Amino acid sequence: MAWVGIFGLSEPGEERDMREEEFIVTPWKVEGKVDYNKLVEKFGTEIISDELLERLIRDAGESSHLLRRRIFFSHRDLDKVLDDWEAGRGFFLYTGRGPSGPMHIGHIIPFYFTKWLQDRFKVNTYIQLTDDEKYLEEGRGLTLEETRKWAKENALDIAAVGFDPDRTFIFQDTEYIRNMYPLALKVARKINFSWVRAVFGFDAQTNIGMSFYPAIQIIPSLFEKRRCLIPCAIDQDPYWRIQRDISESLGFHKAAAIHSKFLPPLMGPTGKMSASDPESAIYLHEGKEDIRRKIWKAYSGGQPTLELHRKLGGNPEIDVAYQWLFYFFEPDDGKLGKIEEDYRSGKLLTGELKLILTEKVLKFLEEHQSRREEARELINLYMYDGELAREMWKKIHE
Ligand code: TRP
Image: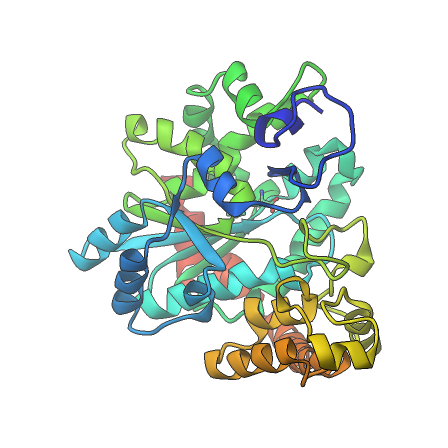
């Protein structure tokens, strides 16, 4: 496809195997070993500096391992968000999910980070479920009924994260479109085809729903006349680039964003987990046996024999179990440091490291799953009956 050449390092239309140093990151596809510094350069975003990190943590009143460890590593205008916050002008949060199937651990981490931001700053949070987008993406082969159903299912997982019901609105595009459509028209009129073709790599065969869709993903960043901060994985940034070029001419702020890396897939430290390979990820609904089995099979940085491992030690950089602990599951830096040291020295074995992760994942998912059951009642507050939800639905009659 043409867009291979846009963000990847190969030329458009070039059909050949990727070299090891090549990678692709677009909103629809992540492949290869991602070089995050190159990506920041290509996308024109900024690495979060040490000073900015300190300022964010100071304003938040608490640190987060996702920030300290640079899982959320890049941004646009985060400094301006903090200017607004410090001056009492406030800001709001927006994030989303493309409901193409069940959610896995990599999908839910940005939501836990978004909740952390909401708790620390006490701000409104809008969560878009793009059942339209996932239907339009032809490669997925999903029916509209399916993506609408997945939106409802995914909403339960998102509600299980524990957002503040008074300050959170979760909505599904095919339902809420009536409220968004007038503004979507104003946005769409400012974007021409050659622009989205260049940004997203559309071609003459791309269905026209796809060329309109970027307007829809931009709308929630305009829900308030304050600055919007978007926590998301970095592959979503192309949308915000367009948003930032048109929002001010419509009387809104340029969106700010804070971008995450991708949780490494179980079979190796490259790329992103993919729905087409269920063994690459752990799903939020999975049971104990599957979780144990998948982690046991995960790519390891250990040595092939016990003897060699004791002698040479393991390599945490490529070890998926270690990476998952680093990325999310062991927030305590002291404990993580000890694990790293013991693994490198050969004192800690691959199997032992995997068991440490397994215990963490089992506990996390058990808790998530029980909160998901409780969320069946809460979901109405988030989507229809809560304070913010009602306020947003009222906008129909404005
Ligand atoms: N396009 C995103 C996806 O496929 C869903 C999405 C919509 C989103 N709005 C967002 C993600 C805002 C992050 C932030 O998953």
